[in-house]
Image 1 (tube, rainbow, N blue to C red):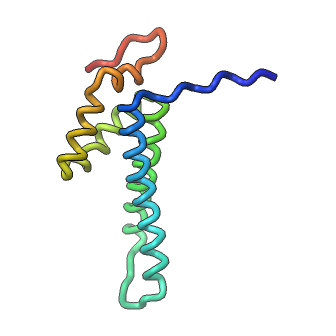
Image 2: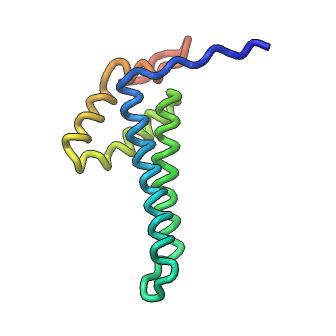
Amino acid sequence: MDSPPPRPRPPPEVALVARTHGLVGLTALASLLLLHLLTRRLTHVEFGPRTYAIALGIGVGYTITGVLVWYGTPAGRFLSRLCGLLYLARPQLGFRLWRSMDSADYRAHFRRPGGRPPAA
């Protein structure tokens, strides 16, 4: 059986944004796990379920956004802008990512074949 041809890698701008979102998400999830492992036996340090739910939501949200950006889904483009607000606190990183998200290659990555291009 013939397998479908592999999907080409996204442009460098898209890969940078997707990897950044993915790494932020995985870091949040790893931090949550580490926090839980380090504090579970400490009786004077307690985190409620809401703390875990918020941290888990952030970690999963950023990770999913990275995957959606990599594959060029319309939701990925929107979520990428939303997640990108966090990076503006670090101007050297934030402005670079926002410039990447404004590039023509990045916008073209989200165009559907045969469809009209997304609004700029």
